Image (cartoon, rainbow, N blue to C red):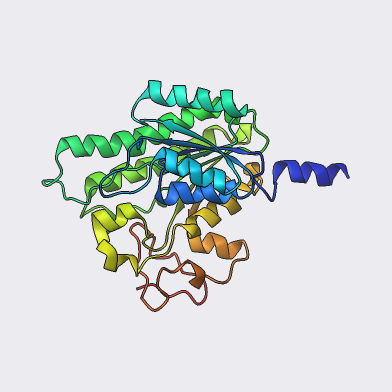
Length: 297
């Protein structure tokens, strides 16, 4: 009986009562992860900067909070700029004051611009590095003291495997550097805090994911048909958070391969349009083979 109870405490099958601090959770992948946890009865801190709807990108921290509550969770919408230490520290404290602690930190906030060196102005370079690399480091740092008190603490970055193939850098050096900084933080912190039992991992999609930001910035509506839905990342994150943190850290996960490892076999459910070919995402290593039956491109 003792061993069964201890296994449940370290590796719950549900996130009921857990508190997730998710950056960039007002829409897209961050919101999908929050909604998946909310269906278990989790507490979700929506840490994002969108208080008023963007003209091209729907969703605010308040509309996200309504969705979280409707899904069965408890929501705390907070206006947070991950570039600001004061903003992040205040948000983490507000989360602890409201829910009593933090169990899971999700570094989802990100800035993107796919331009070459000469076409990248330094203001945009700074934004990408401040949000992606520095923001991930700062938010993780702020959450770690509270994660040390959690039963099964996880930190996740939505960032790529550390594949240093030159072709991932040549077309957009600044963006690639910024995204890899997120992964480097997970690599280093996994080693630094393994004695504390905190898991630090990175999760990345094999294919393009249908979000409003991707539609607006990259693909247009037609391109979305060649994407998977954010649910594939939400399901992968949920599966990871239900694993024992001490035994699952320092990993660079590709969404469908990890879900296959966890027993998932039907990946068509994630396709926006099953009749269209799937568009591969950046940064997926050449030796990463899709699960059986999955065809890319």
